[in-house]
Length: 113
Length: 113
Image 1 (cartoon, helix red, strand yellow):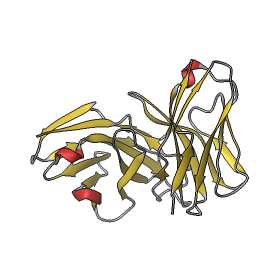
Image 2 (cartoon, each protein chain N blue to C red; image 1 turned 60 degrees about the vertical axis):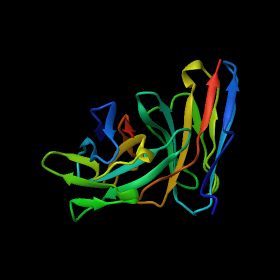
Image 3 (spheres, each protein chain N blue to C red; image 1 turned 180 degrees about the vertical axis):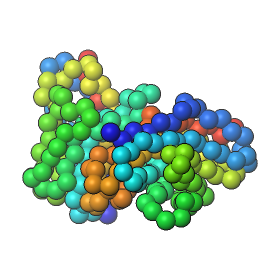
Image 4 (tube, rainbow over the protein chains, first blue to last red; image 1 turned 90 degrees about the vertical axis):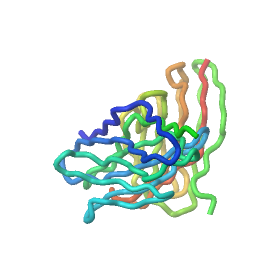
């Protein structure tokens, strides 16, 4: 069964510093990996995804993520965090031919002014 | 495009009552799904559909029914509400294919007393 682990409940970072949100995954085949962001009292918004090809994926709002097959990781990064990046971030995985998307439990990101 | 719409936004039920959460999308997406979001547990898949007339169970289907008579609509029915079903419910849709990102509705906050 596919699964996602987001090991940290909360990530605190100072505004202007690099932001990293960690994600590791487990699938039986090749993974399709996704990051979503949720602002308070809102639905989830798609940030970026990895399907195949270049291990570094660029997405919305200056975010990027690096796929590492040997470490089964897909960490989300942003070079310089903004206060407006404070939100709940979810990593999700699906493998080929699977109709189910598995989410991690989410990471609360707090960017301190 | 309205995207994915959900009604109602808020609902309070008494134990044993039944109700239907509505979900509609205007993007001609084949795939639709229902999730529940609980603190510290991420999103868990309740039911999903890969097209009109086709539905399947997700991770936590007990106590919920779905049907998909049209491409646009995917209602979720609570048969006999229980306090354990207090949660925030999200509907999502996407084009078919495991590599496609899902679009989420704004959510329904349900409280069962």
